[in-house]
Length: 314
Image (cartoon, rainbow, N blue to C red; front, side):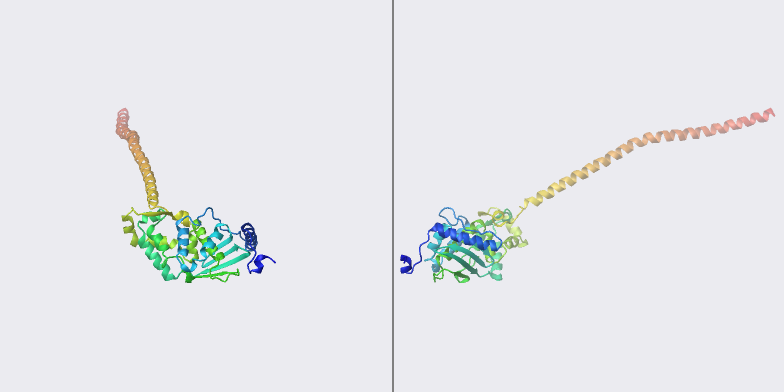
């Protein structure tokens, strides 16, 4: 009999072995689903390094309900025990290696339509400068609004339903905690997943900001204090600066102007040439006409004289 069995504890499994078991299980399951597993890989001691990942982790740690279980979860997340993590609309699925291989399912309540509408309105009003937004940046006000503890995108404990098939009867076991931290690490690279998790479209923030109501105010103050977050890089949103269309229009206008001027120059040249040539061509015609008119009376005089001579001879 092993010591662990006698006291009701499971045999200790080294970290390396449980990671290998979990990854093997994850690969087989992912292969059946026609995909590759997506493990959580954390380099260094910090689970999250960017604004979005840190905000998610800070949000979790702000709730006392999670305080006792989160430290063990951080350890599991750091050592690579989360062998697979998938985030979809309102759902998180994962595989975690422990004494055995455990499957995790977490449901997140989707954000209500009126809540998302309010967030969009508040964010569009918080845009310090439309030029900043169009250059691919969120202002501090927008980011703070999105990550607000009570009215932001992050779910409250009552909106999270968690299930792990481990024998731990706690509402938040270390395996679940590891997955929640894994989400924070994943948001570092793909912050748009937060919007996907709450089943909202992040591009609507841009369209809400770029509205007639915001244009005049937005262009008025270009000196905003930005958080330096690049929307294009983070969310995959392709944004053109407001100067780009103007430059295109200017270049097109310049090209059109050159074409018109070139055409006008050609036409002027043709007209000038025609004017120069016309007198030369007209001169011979006039001279011929004068000669003809001059020869006609002379011919008539000759014919009259010949008739008179013919009469005298007779």
